[in-house]
Image (cartoon, rainbow, N blue to C red; front, side, top):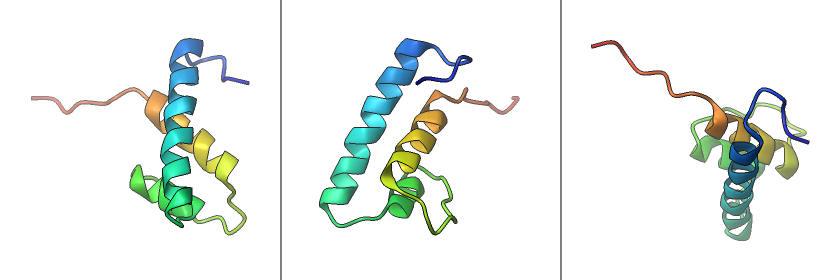
Length: 70
């Protein structure tokens, strides 16, 4: 189920991209924490699983980009 405050199309695309990235890391022997680290996120929970990592990555991909003022 997608969050209500995110465009559903953007959410589905982000979930797909996050799944693909996590699958590549899983295939290469990585952990969910490695997947989060690849996207610049932190995963300090010891019980983190792949579905949680996919959702956190998708949320990061849907987050608006904040730009610095000139």
